[in-house]
Amino acid sequence: MTADRARSLRRGSTEAETQLWRFIRNRQLSGWKFRRQVPIDRFVVDFLCREAKLIIELDGSQHAEKTDGDLARTDLLERYGYRVIRYWNSDVLSRTEDVLEDILAHLELRK
Picture 1 (tube, helix red, strand yellow):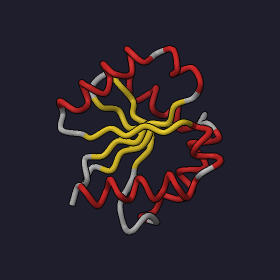
Picture 2 (cartoon, helix red, strand yellow):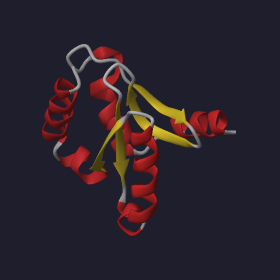
Picture 3 (cartoon, one colour):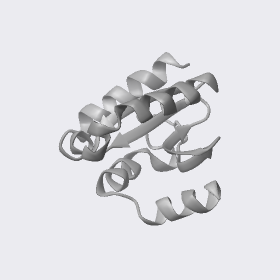
């Protein structure tokens, strides 16, 4: 079921997900490999760099009201050893370079 959901999410990416993916796919961000819409436990994470154990989640306005759910999700993912970082869709679209620099800083910490 989760794999089907991941496939569906890949086909229906948001504008922000498409924008970020354009810059991080095919090892374009300093050689780090990312996958998108990856099932982990009962969740599907937006982007995953397994090597750095880093998850990137992009949040739209609906997440402003779901903070408890996001915290529980992050807690579970961190118990698997992942670091979860979150960005607002609007930041990815309007400040792409800043977001990429921040992601790279997190990746460098995981070396």
